[in-house]
Image 1 (cartoon, rainbow, N blue to C red):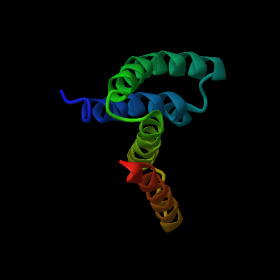
Image 2 (spheres, rainbow, N blue to C red; image 1 turned 90 degrees about the vertical axis):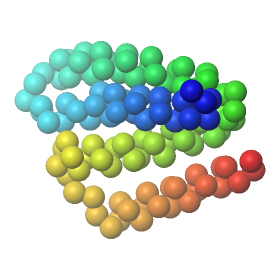
Image 3 (cartoon, rainbow, N blue to C red; image 1 turned 30 degrees about the vertical axis):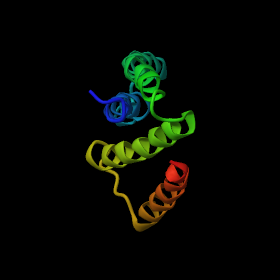
Length: 113
């Protein structure tokens, strides 16, 4: 797989794991906090198995700043879907505008290419 595409796909997958690790426990607020931390840590372990290689592979064609920017934009997209589909929390116009502003800022990072 291309080093241009592989890191993007791997970062999407890693973000799915990380989003569940960080926010999935919010559906289970009655469980003990220590249990949420341990389960979250276990989920995050798999996130690292995707994120670290994604950045190593991606560094052949992207700068560190570009990789970090991709990571942040992917995180927002994954989280937006997770928030609506899993947590059943609506996203409003203010979220959309905020995400658009972040995406606009991210576009500037890639202008030097």
